[in-house]
Image (cartoon, rainbow, N blue to C red):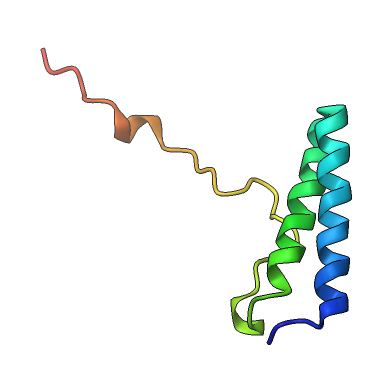
Length: 76
């Protein structure tokens, strides 16, 4: 269910301010804050079962591949 106009405007203003700060400082942490504010803004428009996680889990979507499975064995 979509949030009220006030919720929409509040989420937008929080994102806008965070983005302006990130653009001004070029600081990585400010950019992360702006990204979280963007997710909060998007969540205003998504149904409860489709909402994005408010904060990313540590490690993100990066996986480590086992080296022994990615290299062809030397068969001389």
